[in-house]
Amino acid sequence: MCAFSPEEDSMFEKTGAAVFRRLRKTRNPADLLAVVSSAHKEFERAYDTAPAEARAVVACRAGCDACCHVPVGVQAHEVLIVAQHVQTHFSPVELDELIERAASHRAAFAGRSSLERMTMRKPCVLLREGSCSVYDARPEACRSHHSHNAEACRVNLESGREDVDVYIPGVRGRMFAVMLGIDQAVAEAGFDGRAYDFGSALHEALTDALCASRWVRREAAFSESCREAGNEGDDGDSGVMHAEGYFQ
Image 1 (tube, rainbow, N blue to C red):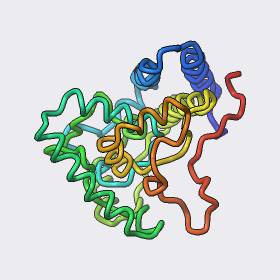
Image 2 (tube, helix red, strand yellow):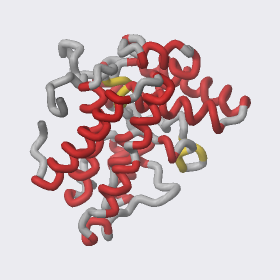
Image 3 (tube, helix red, strand yellow):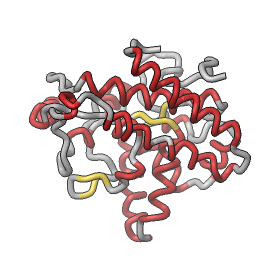
Image 4 (cartoon, one colour):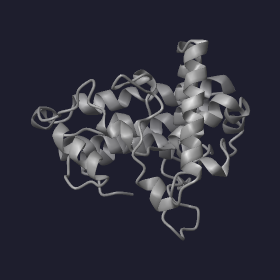
């Protein structure tokens, strides 16, 4: 467990326990993703109750998209929530265009080393005119990230490195506690805890209807080619969430 403050630790425990309890009680497989998706409201609550002085320095605005050009590691449920949103709200033409962009991303991701994957700087396949086209269903990492300096984000993007620390301590820990609580609860309930590259896994989710079925059966939802980039020589366990008995 990371070093949370007592308040952040409480947020992790309460969020995770609630999600775990609801997943265990849900009998209709079609309702499982909705349980996880509904927990995303905890991000808003965590932000709204952050110290006022921390929220006052948040520089993130619509059209500020530097953070939408870096690789995003996600859990399977996040991908499936986005895919469900896309299939409900995108037109057939928009869906076809998205699948094409995701296929290009996946091909580029698969053809690179782990180091090259981690340093990829390409626009997210869901970025539209500088804004997220699935904002209400966006991944947890996107919900959790806040910066105090938009220009520094642009500098980091152009350099390909995080030369300037843009994080806001009074916000970041709270958001991360919620994110970790949700993901740990999903893993505790027996669902896929592997870390995936968002663009690659989204392509597979939109072109293979069995991905969601595998997740419901508590199997690996996506193929190995969609796994998040890890450090060279790691054991393939990088970023994987394991059941550790937190919420039993």
